[in-house]
Image 1 (cartoon, rainbow over the protein chains, first blue to last red):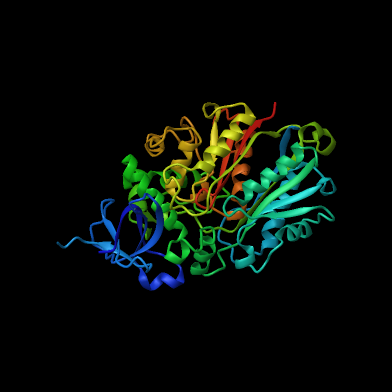
Image 2: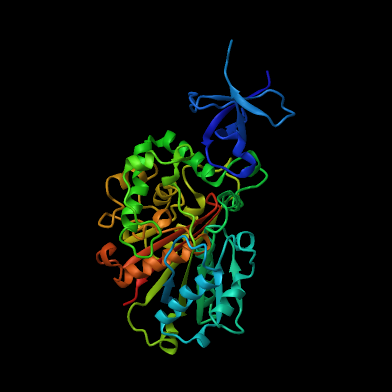
Length: 75
Length: 389
């Protein structure tokens, strides 16, 4: 399943540095794990038109990899 | 500690000057401050200058030496202060402290920045150097993105709407319209702000301060030595409080809706001055983004937590309001020449306390405050000024 994080805050970047221009629009969030520790991460999976809120969760499927994506519970 | 006074001020018009050099900007603002002070150049014992990005954007370091050369100040100690957007405010504090401690009697302090000649992507990267490169920049977080994270958390916690946030730049543009030194002299309305080019949600381009070229300088003198250096007997403004606060570089584990650096610096400055927020007649508050002004007006004690945005919408920060904020137009519309911004704020407060602010003059202004922030509230300078009797 991997590790789930809650969102402390988030933004959608629409004007950026040259290394990230190809990604626009993209999401960056401060995410919180179950210990309360927070970190800033690039969040994969955002598309304009999606409904985002502070209740949205973020998933790190493999805890050995710095790859975080929006979590949609499809069960 | 000795009392210290501001006896001279000078600045360029803030703007988009790709054809002007650092030297050219420094020369105009510096000589203007010296002329305004009534001192002779030989009386200046040291120079401090705030500058953020000239090493990268202008291939020029040691702008302190450059300033001394351009202003013909020979054989005096000088130093460049780099504290991102707070470079100017902290350069001022160094000069203030060294006079107050008795090391010098007369010091020149200023700031300069030149950015508009550089490609916007390079300017964006240069400004992002005020973030934690490893923990934030490599994750794609821009500097506007940092404050967008702050804005979204604040709006969620306190219920401030996107429309209410938009009032902040509207007021800044309205004030700048009355300031001949301002970069942006176009009135805007809330719809214009909300429909502007998106930068980082919730911000549009109108929530963000300008990319600005400009310079500003002031002359400081020990109050007990004024007669020795200048014949000026009006327009002297005393520095009655100085504070410096700070916190970590990265934002993830900081409070996003209140800035510890601002609160620390304000507490120190208020204590030194022996005053509270209630007696401040006007303030130049760091508004690199619309949300920044709101949070800082709360942390400075002008409004309770969560109320700063609503208070501004109710007219309490207008020129004729309870506590006029950014009568100059602020970073948003007067301009944000990063290393010079803190000095440009002091230029406005001294102008107001002298009664020289024209159509944007705050009636009976006696005590003013400047607040200058670096990074995501990483370092902060607060100064309090009083019209000298």
